[in-house]
Length: 146
Length: 231
Image (cartoon, rainbow over all chains, first blue to last red; front, side, top):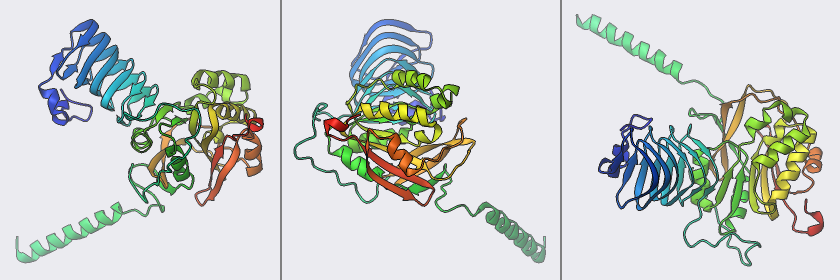
């Protein structure tokens, strides 16, 4: 499987090489749970739970589901919310319509995204109603790259 | 091939290489970066970020298109909740040039955050592309989203221009923005005098204002905490 850049997904995500695969012709409706990495090239509707593993949606993948995983890589289409404990990456060919909750989110130029992105880290205080009493101003380093 | 011919051949090759290299090194404007647009200093981004960092999980609205590196930057440094709400394509619609009701409908559909729930708004140069009535409606809507003490960062051109391309603002670091050209059917950029900006954004108070050398005014506007002044 190759990404939009021609780089095989397996090359950047070695786990994908040994991941379970839902092929192009497969349509799944319902709940998917697993304890190994999963790559989807087909269609899934419902809910996907890979709490401690990586979900890769290949370029041919069409997902309409709520996703819970450690990491999610989107090269195809996903309609639904993503909750990833580590990271979400939307590649150039990827499309996401839904809200993302993850401490790290990377969106490639050209990717489609519509929704909100919640990058609060674990342990961060929930949304507040008033300013903190003794805020600790964050000192921006003299220079750091994007 | 004799030694002389060989030397002449090598000299010719070297001369061609020099011409090729010389042609490849073009004099670009100061600040030009080959990978898409000039990099200009920003005076308001750093104070905006510092203010947001005072909150444990700030809620931000970005009125520009989704730019991956901006998302990554804001996420890694602020751990924020971000709503990318690209208003620019909607402002290209005909209603944006005189139909305040149409704009109001669009804004209500796009900006669905609860009033007073947003800590910061990155408005970029969105006000450059709307008329007075529409800008006032937009300003009221944005001001209502901000919590008391919340900030809005906005950029205003100081010279009239009609560019075929719009601009995307890419955060390079806390002190610099890359003004990346992007295709778009933008209307002529409007020049807002400072007094007009203050009136237009009256629900908000001017926190910082900087006139920059690249023909742009950068402003940080804050929703006042006093109940009587809230918009």
